[in-house]
Image (cartoon, rainbow, N blue to C red; front, side, top):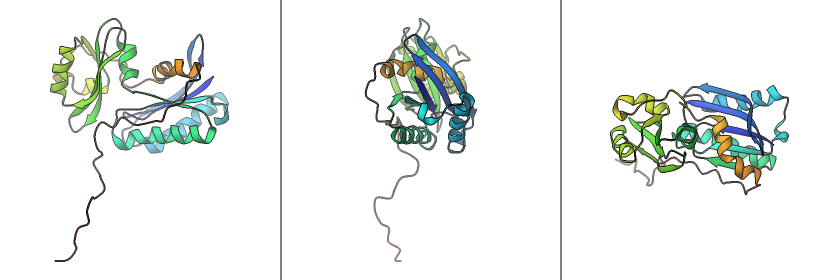
Length: 225
């Protein structure tokens, strides 16, 4: 089955096509651009480009996988709105995957690992995974110093992700260069069982973990002196 994979939870804007079968996941085409300020401009053209590389049409898709975050409000919603809209128009199921899982699950090669992405405001989104790649804490958003203490308590012996690179000196764990951003292959792999068993699609609920900077006013202000 040909599946579209999108993720916009980090500065890496990702669109890819994966073939999912009983014997595994094969990445057929991938587009990734690292630009924290251009999610809306980049994602749709990347989807079109990946489809064109294979000579495929949207109607050829059997499912859509989307990274749910956590991530900053504006960027994250681009990927989820794109996935949800395409799923509805095409009549195919959508499946959500925690974007940190696509960092921590493949990185946990027999040892607990901290996965972290940049949450801005000098904070990080984070989760900890055991040696089998199962999430044992998070996702959450905190100051790096607090995360460092929590990760040590949970036995993490390494760290991955853009947030880990940014705050390596504070987190204080051995840093792995990759994965730095959620990979399309990992996202597809984590959704593969649900896709192959034709599980009901998900409502793509974003993991914002905190309120957006801009909120609607709750009361009217008087303009009278």
